[in-house]
Amino acid sequence: MASLKEIKGRINSVNGTLKITSAMKMVASSKLHKVQGLIANMLPYEKSMHEILSRLLSDESGPVCDEYVSERPLRKVAIVAVSSSSSLCGAFNANVIRHFLEVAEEYLGAGLTKEDIIVYPVGRKMADAVSRAGYRSVGEYDRLADRHDYSESADFARGLIDGYLRGDFDRVELVYNHFKSSSSQSLVRETYLPFTSPAPACDAEEPASLLLKDYIIEPDAATVLKSLLPQVLVLKIYTMLLDANAAEHAARTVAMQEATDNGNQLLQELTLQYNKQRQQSITDELLDIVSGSLA
Image (tube, rainbow, N blue to C red):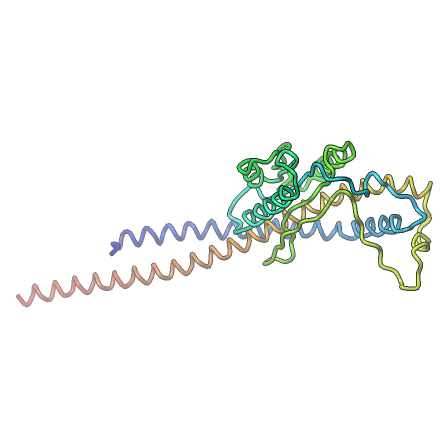
């Protein structure tokens, strides 16, 4: 049985840990609200951009950017896999790393080799996992995991786009955690290039050829599409990084809350044990005194 001094030391240790977990929860929650604000401010802009782009691409008589939308024979693939650069966020990193490995194994099963799979790891945890698994990673992008710098995200996205247009790889996939709510994050796998856009919502009686009637296009649809499509692709990467970062902060908030709850429960148990042993010790001393006086 532990002595009173040992139990007191454990109580002090738990109290110190509770201060850390509570502070980390507050910091993660504050960062989550900040990222949510950035996403909320950007969603209307992104929605409008996608609507315009969808209408341009869905018009059969309009221009088509074949270099962005055409499927190619799959010889090489690039995977952008996003994790965090730090721990203490529950199963956040383990889940996305496992999902990335499943995606990579799927391509290996389709006949590609590890040399044909080019990985862009965002976050130190993902970079370490990619290295351990023996896949070829390109560059270090740890800063993108927790920074909200649009220019850095845009440079990263343009590098992906240029590599795809040069033929360095025939497909680009994104693997990350999507922020659904403060207590829920879902794994996402989506194709970044070749680009696919859902058809815009329209009335059933409205023919596809009339989709562009809402816009006056200058100088022409081809020029607008050629300029707009890369901007939408850049914006997609920035949105994805914000989404993954929000999911990370949400996961850390929940993990630190659970750690705090567990710490409080342990503290109650230790305090109860300390009080019981202290009471027993006092009782034993009183019995010794009484026994001595009677003798």
